[in-house]
Image: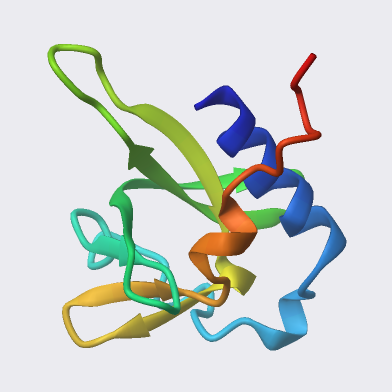
Length: 107
């Protein structure tokens, strides 16, 4: 799961700019908290638990995972990666981009 978080942050630094953001700062408020997040291909990722500032950029704080008593991980998702849809947030990436490749972090 740590690898997924690292991959998400790495992709954010390498891809989209804030000029392509579909959720602007005026929408990034309490209305987004509690909304589920899905990838472009419909795979559920988690749920928004907060809005935070990372460096000079605003980001969604997303609870990802959580199974059998182990709590979810908190992941920052840049607003530039997301579209606000009716009742949910859709990431602008597919689940394949979020899945770490076999070469990353393996020995």
